[in-house]
Length: 441
Ligand code: 7B0
Ligand code: ZN
Image (tube, rainbow, N blue to C red; front, side, top):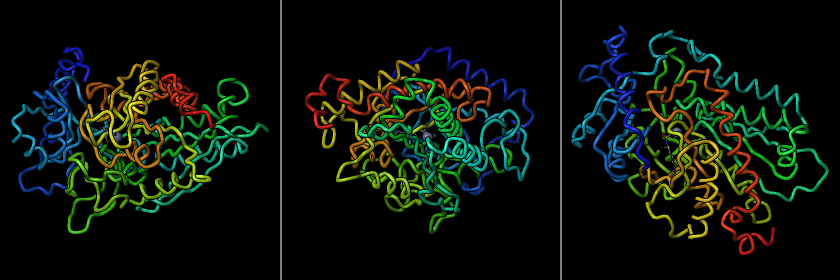
């Protein structure tokens, strides 16, 4: 990990202290009384210090907490009461961080975002914005329903494709967003891409060329149920998982990004307990959301060849460009040659240079098993990245940055997205090996 300046952490702590002293609601935002059910409770963020290695961070995750942020030897986690108790047994100093700002003004029964967040799109608002784009640009943008969420919401995929007569021999590229409920900025990222590509086709030469030579798929909301639940009380719930019930437990939800069908649950990179923030589900692809997207991706195999060559799955937060594998610390191994790794890293670093994120192999953060990028690469040989968007720290808003950042922080990834699209016909060109790998295309 790249250590960050100490000032950042001091600012976070100072902000925490200021909020704790100034905000009247802080008093009732303490841990619930002993004996409270750990399922209905809103989890909180905590800063944990004294972590020297990825293994130490993976041990944090083994409590069932999610690791949200890593700065040098410090991590920020989301934990419920029980996970907090386990965390404390690990012996690292643990400090409670303030709750998201929106949590102050609870308006039960709300279906929209609270004040300061109203430019974020609810699921319904995103769907109507998308339908309006499809109606306006019918020759560029088409919508397919690829399945239903647990609660029955449509899971949709959008296809962007230029209408030039020229033959499409180029690759397909996939952008996915919102596996994690509280990561609302990622839906805005998907909407930005749809708006940008439709609005600039025919006038922006780079976008025109890309849409004429490639097909772009956008799945803007993998977890609509979790997203709706996160905002439904009028105060952000800090929710991560989907909303699927678990047999034999009152705890709800599967962590979609631990549910993919490649090395599922293999390696201590997920939780086997339904109350875990990173619960992997009872079986690989047990969630309807993951199953729908896996089937969609498999449906892109044409004549024995996967048409999608590259992908980005958008998350928040941390400002990172991550590549597989997450399940192992090895940079190479079965399913990942040195050239594969080098091409991943070369394009990943180039993208990170354009948006100012930090590039690294996913497992340098902490181990994850059953995550989408491992499946896309391990099972489908798609060059799949995970982007952790703005901000870099909980002090700058964590999972809940104000809506004023949306235009800047979505446009910030424009260049990286264009670079991936331009590399997608031959990712090995980035390491000078197109002659070895890309001659038949
Ligand atoms: C996660 O804070 C995923 C890396 C995938 N190999 C990182 C992601 O699922 O833990 N971080 S996050 O939850 N968005
Ligand atoms: Zn995430």
